[in-house]
Length: 86
Image (cartoon, rainbow, N blue to C red; front, side, top):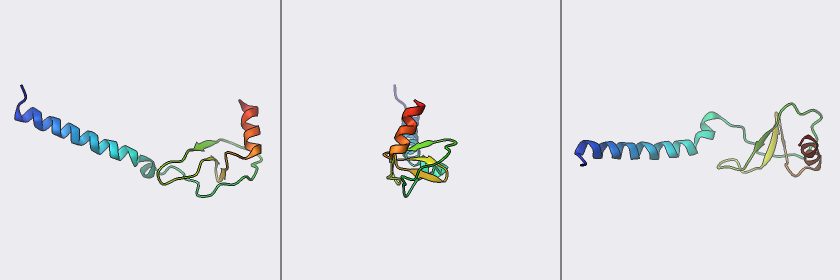
């Protein structure tokens, strides 16, 4: 049967899970993920690594990052490069 102690534990666990859920949704701002404010179609001569930024809360642009550049995913040269690699 449920006792006062077990009910308080359930309330604690439920509260903790709600706090964790909302904290996780804000995690990208805490860990400092990059966010491109502007994207360009400029061709990058040599790509060392690439990260895809998908739109999320507080960061609305879809882009591919190659520090310090933010490239528009619809750029023809980028599509050709991705197709060549895959």
